Image (cartoon, helix red, strand yellow):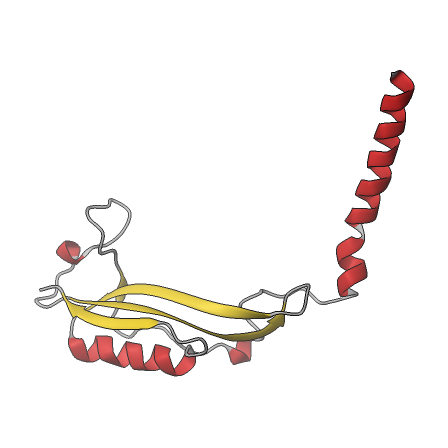
Length: 135
């Protein structure tokens, strides 16, 4: 019994050693980088001018919602969409830089401007976008 446990432990050590070197063997010497960013110069500017991250779902102590905002009008903007990142996963598939943004805006104009900017940068694959008046 002790001999079989020792041989099992030895076999397990060999298998773990082989698998530890497997990613390097498959990928070669690939420089490290974030999966959603091909290069810093390739990242589109998608910062909203007037929008703030907010939640539409009920009361939350950690997320801003429309009742907390000082504006007379509040527009809820939801955007989802993606773009090829220029990075491939281990088996050669293109990694998608996917965005799912929930923001509140003080006007329809600022919400629409943000949606236009996001749709221009993140449209492959196409997602969902809307501007909805909350008050």
